[in-house]
Each structure stands twice: as C-alpha cells, then as structure tokens.
Image (cartoon, rainbow, N blue to C red; front, side, top):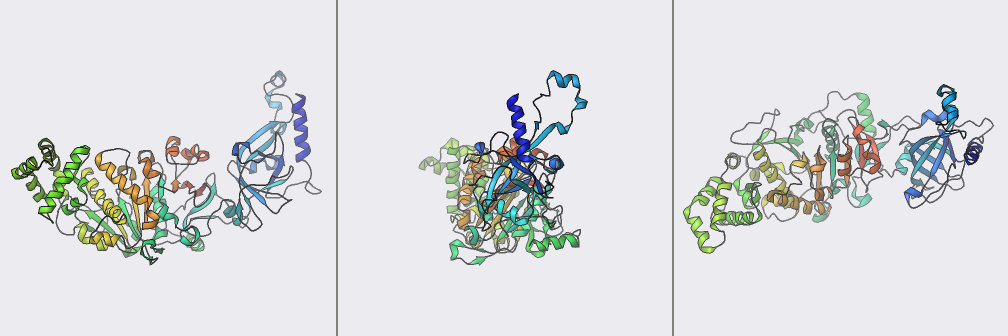
Length: 573
C-alpha cells in the first residue's frame, strides 16, 4: 500500500509542473510523459512503453487510435505515435472492492478520484529534414505531448506519398483527421515508377469486405483514377503506354462509369480538383461486352456489344471443356484428343469436334496407337458432349478472337457483363478471357491476340474473385490458378495488374492472395479480416466499420492505417 501511495505521489509531481505561469496546456496539447512503471523504447515492440498523464480538462479529447507527436526538445526530432491504450489509475491506495468503499457508497466516488493515462505506440520519428525515421531516441519525463496539427506531420509520420492514385482521407475511428487549417489529409497509392521503381498497381490490389460495405463504390472511384495514367513498358524499351482496363462484372455494376455523377456538388468538385482526383464519366472509352448463350439475352445497359466464344480457343485452353469432374489422367487424355482434332481441322467448331469424338474410327485409332485407353476415351465422350458447350461455343458473328483489337486497346475500359449467363456458361466465358490475358502476358500465346495484349499495360479487375481463383482444387481450378500465380509474380515486368474484389477473401486461393501487395479492407468479420491479411491491431475493429470506412495495408506504400473513402462516387453509381 505504501508503494502505491508513493507511485501516485511521483505521478502528481511529474505531471503537475506548470508549462508557464498558469500551468495550462495549449489547445493541441493533451498531456505530459509520465513514469507510472517505466519509460522505455526498444527494438521489440512489446518492450516499448511510453505513457502520458492526461489532466482532467483533457480527458475527453483523446480516443484510441488518435495520432500524437512528442517533440524531444533535446534534439530536433519528434516521435509520431498512436494511442494504443487508455486507462485509469487510483489516486490513493484504497481499492474499489475494499470494505471501506463498499460501506462508504459508490455515490461518494467520482472520476476525480482517479488519474487517467494513455499508452502510446511509437510509429516513426520525424527528423529535421522532414523525413520519416525509425524511433531511436527516448522522450524525457514530463515532455509535453500534443495532437497532430499539420498535414505534413501525418504524411511524414505515416510515410504517405504526396501524389498518386487517390483512395480517401486519413481517418481515426471513422472520422477524417482535420489539420489546424481544417483540411483533410489525402491518401495516395504511388503511381510513378520513378519513386519506387514500379507503380503500386502492378503489385496487385485486393478490395474485400462484407456485402453492403461499399466495395463497388470504392472500386469505381479507384479505377477512375487509373484511366489515362501513363506507364513505361519495361519489356518494350520503356515506351510510354496507357492501360487497358478489363472488368469481369458478374453483377452488372460497372457500365455506369461511362456517365457523370449528376449529384456531384460544386464544393465536392473543388475538393477533388484540389487533391488531384479525376472525376466524371469516361464516356466512349467504356464498352460493355455481353456473351451470347444460345441466343442474345443481355439487356443490362442501353449500349453494348454481343460476342461469342469460338471453339478454336479450346486449342489453346483445353480445360475450357474439362469441367470439374476430370481427374489428372483424364485431363491429359483430353489434351491429346483436342490436339489431334485441331491437327486435322485447324479452325474446327464444337459440332465438328463432337463428330470427331463420336466417329468409331477415332476410337479405333487410339486403340491402335495406345495414346488414350478405350475406357478413358468413352468417359471423355460423355463429358465433352454437354448442352452448355453447345450453347456457348460458335454462336455466330463477333467472336472473341475477332473483337480482340477493340477489347484489348490502349486507354479503354472493356466491361464483361456475365449476370445474364447460366453458371456453367459464365465460367467458360470468364476462364476464356482470363486465359487469353494470362497467356499473352506470360508470352506463351503466339497468336495475333496474344501479341496485341502484350503491347500495353492491362489492369484486370475481377469482381467476385473467389469464384475464379478458388481454393477448390479441381483440375480446371488448378490450371487457371497456376497461370495467374505465374503472371502475378511477373506483373511488374509484363505490366499486368490484378485488382481482385470479393466478399469472401477466405475462399480465394492462398497462393494468389500471397501475390497481393495492397489490401483495401472494408467492414468484415474478425476471422475474415485475419485471412484477408488485416494487421492484428485492426482485426478486432473491422467488424464495426460502417460503409466507406476502410483499412489500407500497403507495406510498400505506407504504414497500415485507416481511411475514410469519399461519401460520393466520382462517376455515376
């Protein structure tokens, strides 16, 4: 008990020393460094302990997560930190559970009987040259701690780029930070290869969150900033090219990016202009492509282009007709069957392929050469003759391999709407598009469309990404996942950017997720947040995030932090 009394006496002596004649703290100052137990910094985070005494008049001004600075005084440095814990300590040695308090009555006790302190998590140190450094100096006891007051302090302390792709405003507990000038602090992803060697987009992006938390809204605002960007092609002598954005759109949500948001106020436009944010519809740069299944059925937007999948693509991608039922041995036999068919008929159709498979002479050929076992051949006969294949392949004009020069063009957005398709047809269509892009960027497609796709940057946006880059391990899934793991690893070299959008990150293949550098995480359950790669300190709070509130974890861009996205869409939504 005597030790506790002495501890509280020391706390009061340390923290009640006046700053001037009045002893009052300034408007931005929130307290002083104290030593309740110890004051320490260390290379190991758990051994670092910086505590701040909060006088009564400042107790309601600080919340968990708030950013503060500690000017060292004895050196021209200041520590940039966040509030990690708030706690009350007893002013005297009486315990709240003692008999004295029980009999005196709780009504006799008040907040004045306690001392409030805050424990800080040092994030970085701001040097005299306005650079972010690791924390290497310890603050002195009784040093004044204040809230951040300037945009530069936030940007330097969190190591945020000065420009790039705008994502939102730096926030704490859902509220954007306001500087002394009542301005918000913008957050950007690096979009200039001169700063890091590569724009962040080519290190891939995940946008994840539960339904209704604003994923599509965030994605549209994000993608609008990429339109018109210019990137050097590393594999083509550094020539400058604008990207082609390809969007897999299973919910018919992206075609409105053509149009301006009619509700964008003048004040909002001025703010966007001040932050260098692109806004307004992309107009004729965007084209919606709708695959035909049996007969045209898409009616999701006023203007679109129908297209079909030519069976000729199966020559390059036999797994398009593999389905999920084939084992590895059967798939090897299917590849042989497809190869032999196209050797005989270079531009063969699906109907001609069925005739080839059903021809008794074909079975006899394999019996004689031993390339495919008769039982395996008969199993393949049943599996390649499916109604969905007949409805998808060779449905008329505008084949994918004829439209490729329009679809894969510089500075355009090609949106592939799939909501009108059956699940089987949708999977074939999406796998065909994904395969063309992956093979072209891996330089394994020696075709006209392959050479076209290789010419300029491709930003591939896959909504509901868990449907296609799945953890399931059918033969078809393994092949497409392996392709994109290889393509993603070389994304910076080949200028391929993946933007995966999902409400089920736990169902996305772990190896694909491992290639993602930037994670934009909206509200989600704690278990989902952990699997999506949220920093531990944010995992427990993400379930409470309302629409538009997000955590950005981009190690190559900045410290992990919270953002508030725009309340409005920069295009029609």
